[in-house]
Length: 159
Picture 1 (cartoon, rainbow, N blue to C red):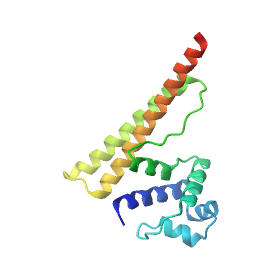
Picture 2: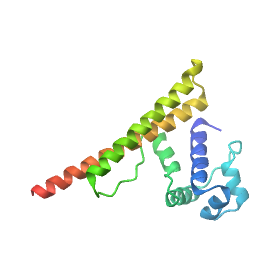
Picture 3: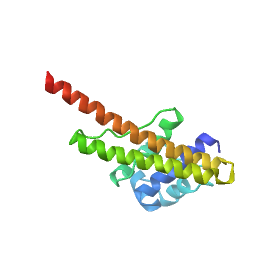
Picture 4: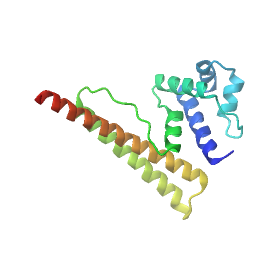
């Protein structure tokens, strides 16, 4: 399995976890449990179809998770996928988003510290570190979207 395919595979596994496991993922995607089990097995090269990936991400979002597969594809292209926030209570939202971003940066630092503890970083640790960096970038992108929406509201109020 290529590194790129492995990165997507790990995102599929995270999505299945967010959905609540293999049985629920199978129901969400409309496939058998054994098929969803193969998607969840790191040693199996089987990946969901694009349609099934969208269904898994939708189910993960409905369960309070995030669109892990979409985020992985975006990261492979050098982008970040973010859920645009509703523009309600901007100051409170900004403060909460700042706290979320700070927590994500803490996760990056913790992951890097653990990975570098033996003075080398292996492929698995690189994947974990990239995932944490993507999470931090996503938190900052959400904060940026909130600030832009606040600026738009100010411009509308003046006009």
